Image (cartoon, rainbow, N blue to C red; front, side, top):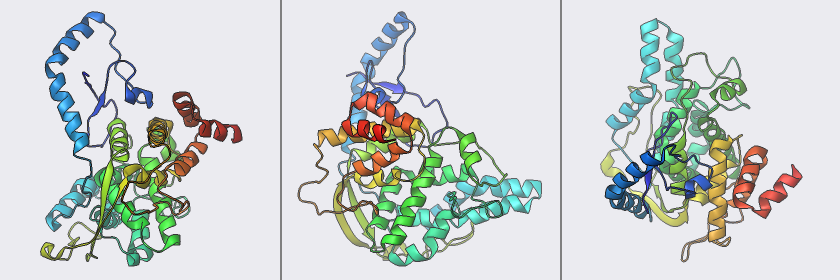
Length: 373
């Protein structure tokens, strides 16, 4: 099959390019836009050109999928790398504050920097039970707007920092971090972090930035209020969701970090060691529970929910992987690795997305849900 590269028409921070096939492609059926050619002649010329590179493109896509079966998710980096991430993520605010002589702008970045340590812990699969009751909730709230916590006097980070946080974490880091957190034996604390991560993901993937701003308490200092996680992030989310992923956990690492100059990771890299590996699970089992909270926009939720339902049908409702242990990643539905309860809850919050998913799948569970709304 000849594959056509799909450009990203909107600001997006996902790392993978999206691909759609001509005609009624799989991604177009998931609700993602496809390319329409207006001139038949141009289509013929382009098709001829693509024949020459079609084999290469197919190999790239197949290799990308093969590399994810399974994939190692944990990422440990040097302190210099962590400080570089801080500068890249927050440096615009530090610079803007200095240029304007406005300490309040720079202080926004200083507060948000506290949320980078949880990001690094999640990427490194090094969260432990003590972190759930101390630094992790406060750290997440420094970058994720929480209506139960923030007010005009205590705003969240700017919405572009919120987006940058999820972009830096990546879908692989989201799986690595949440799978580590969800398996810790503190259900109340785990449930609170599930709620926070879901709220932030809903904000970051919403293309209606005006609605996000209006619904939350954010500071006035903005560098790029229009930034959000768009098409390529959605493709990445689906790509990881349908893959088998190998989970791991590192022994507790000693973290610091509330400003650019801090040493984010105190431990010598030579001392890092894996505490546990496994199980192997489908990415959807980890990602879907995060859809339970937050009002997800249909531009993101429709293709994601459609992909999950199609995957569930292909698996005939069996979300287990032969030879692997049972584990749940949903603090509010601990029965199995099944992603359906959480995605149906997400659709309950967005009837427009539910209608679109029903049209795409004809799924009776979605029809029943709509009849109850």
